[in-house]
Image 1 (cartoon, helix red, strand yellow):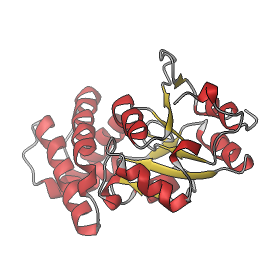
Image 2 (tube, one colour; image 1 turned 30 degrees about the horizontal axis):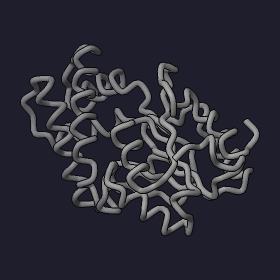
Image 3 (tube, helix red, strand yellow; image 1 turned 135 degrees about the horizontal axis):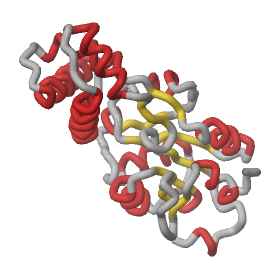
Length: 230
């Protein structure tokens, strides 16, 4: 579908990805280094902490859909902590490192997130978050200062992007059609392919500014697409 062939205000709803689109993790390597020292008495370099956090983030991305309730989420956190300990060569019970890992993760909103959310609301469009994440995603967004409902995470819905079902769930909840919905996310393989498979319009957010056709470099760039003031 081509946005250029649609009317000026072709959308009734906007779907937004979470990680890399609305929220980010604030200084995880520095925080992980500090909490490991405080919690389990182990000193590591910031470079080593950065590598360990990157490994943990990759594991989390592949397994976040498994954190669908409190017990499963606790087990996911334990396994993520085990990845950190393994990467750092620390021989400790992963349960001891869970608190250190959780304290090292602080969610912050991108500066363009709140203005974009306000612009969407001002334009009278419906809004939802559609993201691969565990069931605590609503609290992550609140921690970052963003109050958005509804939220569709892959753990709670049982569907992970690029599976189109997570988009279908959002569309049904909002009562909107795919052809009048725009999704914005930062991952072509998940956000782009998933939205298109669901028949939803899509724009990929590339904050580096190096994207091509079909990309935006700031979240606020979507506001002209929906007829809202930028």
